[in-house]
Amino acid sequence: MTLVGHNIESPTKQLVLVKEMVNVLITKECDYGIRIIRALADGEKRTVKTICEMELVPFKFAYKILKKLQKAGIVQNKLGQNGGYVRIMPLDEFTLYDIIQAIDERLFLAECLRGDIECQRKVEDEYCKVHDELVRLQSLLIDEMKSRSIAAIME
Image (tube, rainbow, N blue to C red; front, side, top):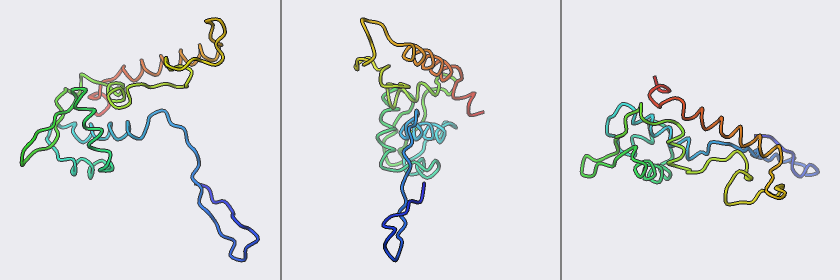
């Protein structure tokens, strides 16, 4: 964060905190999903409250993320008085990419790589060289995220 002078002419010379704009590739929701998996890595059943406390995941996000991870077959909700969530997919059978896909479904380095948006620089079915490079880089990133299992990462 940056301190920015505001209303300098005033006798109090108020200072205002301004958050810097940051673009991220991995969303906060994906980060929380990875943390949730880390909390469930040992195979033990845990309540949402316990998961949130262990991994500093805001409670308001946890259920939404766990639902997505459950839909992907990574975790399961055990109902009942002693209920909670448990990881059901073995750690060596999924990757960071799988977690990200379960939560965000679509990962793009740039907007022009999305299939549902036409690249503004496309001319007669030809993409610019920058687009081609971004496609290459995105492919490398995805391949790398798929290259190591969660078990290998968490060892």
